[in-house]
Amino acid sequence: MSPGVDKETELSDRIETFLAELKRGGNGRGSAETARQTAGLLRRITAQARWGNAGELMDIIRKEGKRMVLAQSSETTVGNTVRRVLKIIREEYSRLRGRSEETDQQESLHKLLTSGGLNEDFSAHVPALRANVIEVINELLTELEGTLDNIAMQALEHIHSNEVIMTVGRSRTVEAFLKDAARKRKFHVIVAECAPFCQGHEMAASLSKDGIETTVITDAAIFAVMSRVNKVIIGTQTILANGGLRAVSGTHTLALAAKHHSTPLIVCAPMFKLTPQFPNEEDTFHKFVSPQEVLPFTEGEILAKVNVHCPVFDYVPPELITLFISNIGGNAPSYIYRLMSELYHPDDHDL
Image (tube, rainbow, N blue to C red; front, side, top):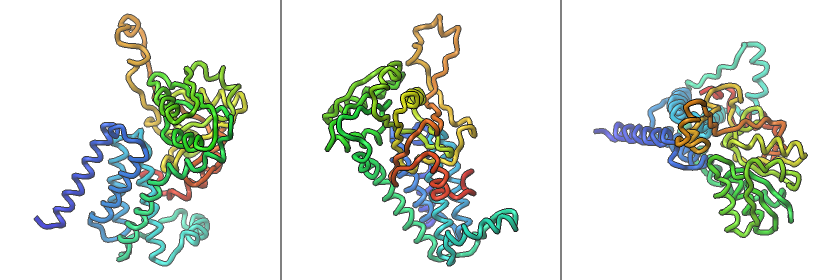
């Protein structure tokens, strides 16, 4: 067997293994690890797949990206990473052909008006493209490695001494954020338990181990306690294109209570969670799990008479959010559209 065929077989095996892991729910990996693994796999595809120009490479990455997204449609990180890589290919191709992104943007409005659309030609062969794209994907991987630290570094700007902070469930990003602030400041954290999975208990145990004064409350007590809270700091599963959130169930309750008491709501989320999807676009927005935790199967008589839905995520509209803290700084929800155009190309919104 020739080395070329051998490499292609190894590549397709790696892709299949990754797809199988995604279908099983990522084996408990966080979204940061999923983003890193996706970018690493796309780098390998760029290096080992057979392609002659940017158009062919984009088609391969789009095709494999679509398969990855379908394998675990509720994990938007995969699709976002694929879109980032597609944007990298577009930018490198334009740069190597002597055109910068700025001039493209200046011309684009005129082109839109005159030709009715933008169809750039990606069929030209550019020898240095493979090496350049791999180099920029390496930079993306370095950025993904440092996202958590970059967000945590900003903690002292937002958390002050003797404040009462509320959060919900368990978010690795929020955990790192609070622990970083605790190195120099004393404050009290109230954690809503986030039933039915009660991940808030794990969060509270982890924070108190680091010497942070922590209290766990039931989700029903959120509104009653909110008047004592200075800030609400939460994580999210996805940031949507309109600046809203798809976050763990119970977050909407927390956000409404914070709004009622005029308490600032801060969302800690890395940029790879930003997706061009809108809340009303797809059914994949909703993910339901077994209601066993809420209504056990031992309650046979009741179960026979009712339908129980147990959603995993809540939608939080942008007007309830004060500030996003990402690895590139703090932004208001209204600025999300700008970040979207910097990270993804409009043609890649639908893979």
